[in-house]
Length: 130
Ligand SMILES: [Zn+2]
Image 1 (spheres, rainbow, N blue to C red):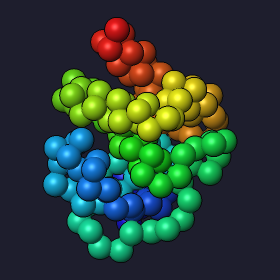
Image 2 (image 1 turned 180 degrees about the horizontal axis):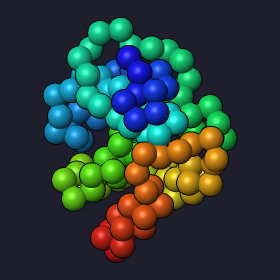
Image 3 (image 1 turned 60 degrees about the vertical axis):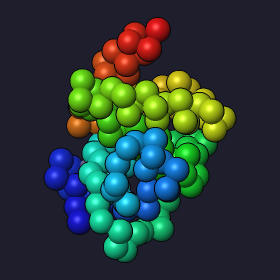
Image 4 (image 1 turned 90 degrees about the vertical axis):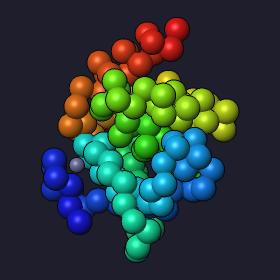
């Protein structure tokens, strides 16, 4: 399946059980686009193993990476997703990831072209969290 925004091939990953409860979501997998940050819940079918966000130095592997991708997807519709975005952010930080540095790197990276204004949404999210 290709991204509806930028036509890049979507990466599909299993959502770890622990994250399903953080998100209060039954979705077993997520489709994500590592160019424009689109995400979409999916059924558990064939997950892909290719690395995501290879342009971003020290982008976390495994479950942490999936949590970051899910957070990026939720920042888009922040008003609807504020609770789960905050829960994800706490989960990511508790797991030892410097999410502030990571999102700065994503904002600065020219090969990533978010389909929404990531910088603005991230600033808004942080101002709420204060
Ligand atoms: Zn895309």
